[in-house]
Structures are given as C-alpha cells and as structure tokens.
Image (cartoon, rainbow, N blue to C red; front, side, top):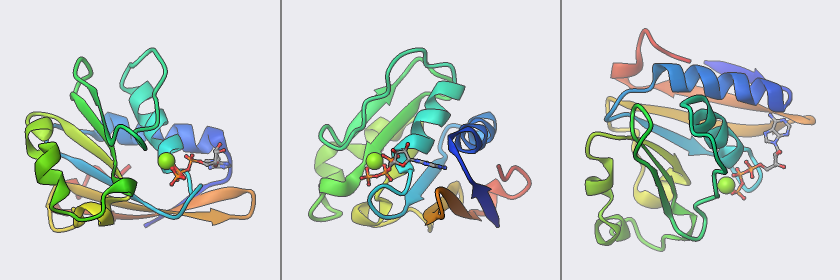
Length: 145
Ligand SMILES: Nc1ncnc2c1ncn2[C@@H]1O[C@H](COP(=O)(O)OP(=O)(O)OP(=O)(O)O)[C@@H](O)[C@H]1O
Ligand SMILES: [Mg+2]
C-alpha cells in the first residue's frame, strides 16, 4: 500500500490515522534515509495521542518514553546502534511492556518485520513531499492507516 504525503499537513493526517489504530504491543517501524520524515511522522503520532509538549528527537537518547498516553508510547531512534544486541543492554523489551513502539532506523535493531503487530513504513522523498510504502503485519490487517 502506498500513501502520498505531499506536505506536512498530509504527514499530520497520516500520523493521526496511525495513532487512532495503535494498540499496546504494536511496532511502527519507520525506515527511510536521512531526512525522509521519520521523526516528523513520529511527532504527528505522539501529538495525535494527546501529548501536549515538545517531542525531542531520540537520536542521542535512543529512547524517549510517553507513559501517560494511551497506549503508552516508546519512541526510539536506533541510528546510533552499532549492533542489534545493544537493544538488550538498553532493555528495550522492558520499555515495550504494555506499550506501543515507534522505531526509527529499525534495521539497526535487527528489524521488527517478523512481528505480527509490526506496521512497516518506508518513507521516500517524492518531489517536495514524501511517499510512504506501508506493509502491515498480520495483526494490522483490517486496521491499516
Ligand atoms: N511530507 C512531507 N512533506 C514535506 N516536507 C517534509 C515532509 N515530511 C517531513 N518533511 C521535512 O523533512 C525534514 C526532515 O524530516 P525528519 O527530521 O522527520 O527526517 P528523519 O527521517 O527523521 O531524518 P533523520 O534520519 O536524519 O533523523 C524536515 O524538515 C521536515 O519538515
Ligand atoms: Mg529522525
């Protein structure tokens, strides 16, 4: 499934649809190169879930948590990981307990596409805007954003 995202308003609307479908245990795996829009889409999802404040990019902290949202949300950026085994040292599984995960650079964490609750989104630059290639895992069928 392809979603055209010509501008920031379209990105916001897409993030709002993702937020409305999101459940605990889900992973939204956000792939795409530098500047593809992964953090922008994450911010739209987090804002749509009702977070009122700033959403810092997790590039340096790797993990940011939003415990009071429904579902509770973990926003991760695995860009700086050198090996997927580092997710164990970080304690990713503990963070994910009862929460949904938004993962930038998911490949660096070994990927999540094998999880039924993974929505894989690849963002690409398309002219001045973006395009999303969306691949729903089994448990996303019927609630694709
Ligand atoms: N749909 C869109 N249309 C136009 N511009 C966009 C769109 N989505 C994002 N942008 C712009 O692209 C720029 C980079 O976006 P963003 O920081 O989200 O990328 P990223 O994928 O997180 O990059 P990085 O891997 O470097 O963290 C921002 O200036 C943002 O405003
Ligand atoms: Mg980013």
